[in-house]
Image (tube, rainbow, N blue to C red):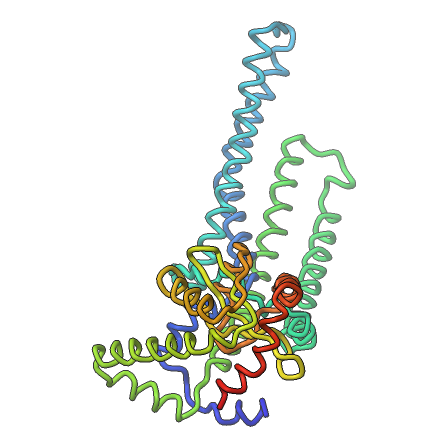
Length: 367
């Protein structure tokens, strides 16, 4: 069935489809881009900023060791030495911290076009579903991720092997050398390794991002009917569309209010939210949301519930969660099963008279 659906998606995604997907956080993104940008900025920092700091450390060391005979250890000199040391540490650490922050912003901006996607932060219950988790574990995405990680390992191994061979050929290992050569050796070796890792990371980032871009575009492909419908909707006058939405909203509210008398329970906030639930054994796999509302509409739901003697239970966190994550006509999220089961168990024990009549009421309502 999924293959048939995919075969029908032959049209490239429209601008509107891409914009909506972007708002939902569905766009090409790869953590390897952040790694590549971070390594590149670190290399630039080592190349241009660190030498100046290293020169300061060398001058300070030369001054200290050159004046040991005149150096007095007291409260003033100790304080000054601590301040100088703290300044040196700060000059080494803060550039790297700033570079890390800048690299994160640049990497994210390159992939999002420097646009915000706040919906990505919303809690999505389907991500917590173990079934979806198992599907993700055996998906093509996991295999591609494994291949990219394997490529990283091979590249890093090759770079380290080349670096070790180069290091072992240096005179520092088999002949006396000048102290200045040691500093140059460390600097050259560090730059040698980092520049090659940065280049390898850039190549891997291009491969990873290209795959994610193609996958995202493929996932957003549309059928011809969807493209036609989108064009048709775009041609409708905005005022007409607004009126249609308002009419649909009123119809939905009317349907919800008509369904309240057949609810098992109404969970309230108590004043701001109200959610009506029903659960028929043998028919529903889990409790279903019949109606939900806030403020004025919540009061209307409670008025109808009171008129029809529908049990009402005050539970602020559950009412808020049901209103936010529950969808009218659908089962409640799995994460709320336990809380709702306790509420239903309570009303089943305390309102037995109501449930004796509820079955007949539902039959009459469906008729």
